[in-house]
Length: 314
Image 1 (cartoon, rainbow, N blue to C red):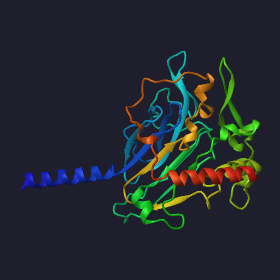
Image 2: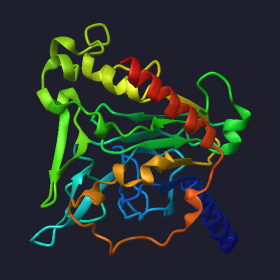
Image 3: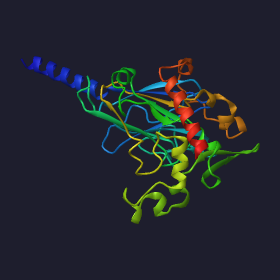
């Protein structure tokens, strides 16, 4: 009898362990340069097996997380080893000194994908919440897409929609917000700061006397971000058009860097202008499947068209 109870306990433990790893983020790099994704779990949430890695152009990596995981994913660019062999990145650096971020977040400016997963299976676990945020600034284009099955079943309202910022804002970033990376060849904009990061005032940071939705409104700078990327967070209280939900089904999400095919051209490639070489020894093995037309291609095209129209009107 004791052996049977032990066996049943082991089965229960294994089933709980399997359930805790029920969601998968499929992270793809369609940029024409290497991106080093970083992953940070929220306080009290177990981290995934990797918190930082390299993706060469065209590569994809699937990362499993707990079914009720919450946290953020971002991309680091222009990474390498400094003179003391410490791993650093020009944008999105997490300050760990290594490829793995190990519980450290992105230094702004960085484009962020934020998730709170409900932990359900079979649609009975409530709604996932997700968004792409430019509140901490921008460093590269990013798209988040829910599972194909969820999108097909719930194509209504704001449920299970693709979101992100697909435009290259570094090309149009206001001079006072620019983060410039210099090389022997030339200088190039590597990221675009938020107004809060650039100026640090309560008006732009939604703090102090401006610390509520009633007192912190959109500014000319947040409207610049919103005009280019209408579905992304542009400032702290930009919730109405920036937070998306999807019935939890345990399927995970696609996270794509540089989803527009134009990002593969040298114009969107910080390495093409002679900026620091990349740190290539940690690249994972991938394939070219992420470069093919996917189920989200039409949505991406519509987002690009909408962003261009909004930018011209801004």
